[in-house]
Structure formats: structure tokens, C-alpha cells
Length: 94
Image (cartoon, rainbow, N blue to C red):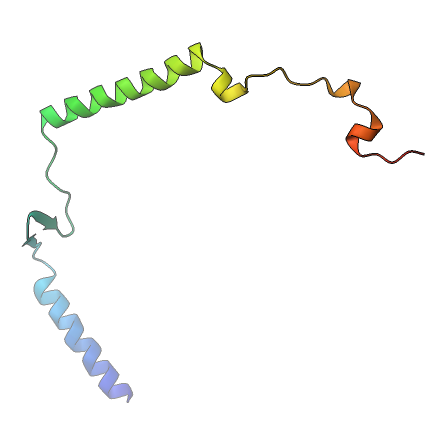
């Protein structure tokens, strides 16, 4: 059993060394699959559009945090906890 496992490992190792030095680019349907290398860099147009969309999104979030803080902090004032009674806090009477 050990011999058969060793032989199959050697066969697999031989296949890996034979094909391992070649980096393959496989085309599937409508896109390119890159194995062990980075994809093609995006065009300058795509980078510019991404930067503009990201800038607009951050402006939108920060502007609404500045002008409408009630969405994050709440619309009502926080209650003064020193004015709560023992009954409101659930503390039984002594």
C-alpha cells in the first residue's frame, strides 16, 4: 500500500514539474481567467469613473452627517439618568 501511494505521488509530482513552469491563460465563455498572475490593469477611464463615484459617495455621506446628524444621533435629547426613580430602574423598594 505504501508503495502504491508513493508511486501515485511521484506521478503527480512529475505532472506538476512538467506543467508547473508554464503560466496558462484560459478563456472561458466571455472572460479571461488568469492563473497565478494578476489580471489586466484597468483603463484610465475606468479608474477616473471609480474615483468620481467614490468621491461623490463620500461627499454624500459626510454632507448628510453634517447637515442631518439626527439620523445617527437620534432625534430626541438623551434623558438625564440622575432624575430616574428606583421604580423606573426596576429596583425593588427597601
